[in-house]
Amino acid sequence: MKDFAAIDFETANEQRTSVCSVGVVIVRDGEIVDHYYSLIRPEPEYYTYWNTRVHGLTLADTQDAPIFPVVWQEIAPRIEGLPLVAHNKAFDESCLKAVFRTYCS
Image (cartoon, rainbow, N blue to C red; front, side):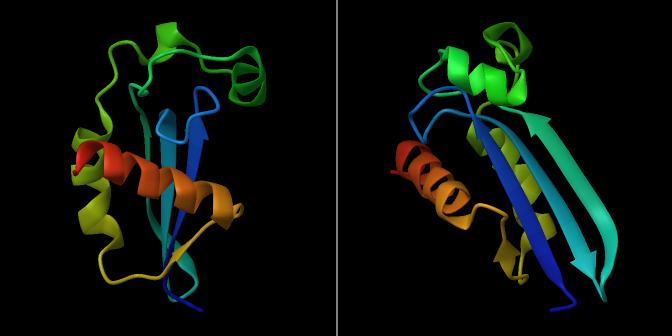
């Protein structure tokens, strides 16, 4: 696969809706051609010790960050038409589905 978008979410707590950051890398012809990273204000907006220990983010880091729909407006055009891959596909896919259910229903 020479063209794809790789995505990675971090969460603030055990809720899959609590995405607090996202990174995306766009690869075309086997070369990285674009990348994007953003903090996200999580929903629900609290952090657990264990999640913070994984990624180092706290409420102070994301309290002024945009909510997921605003960030998605930046991501969607970048990944359009590309296969979406992730290191931990089950986790990242469940996060994406959860935030879509939360914000797009």
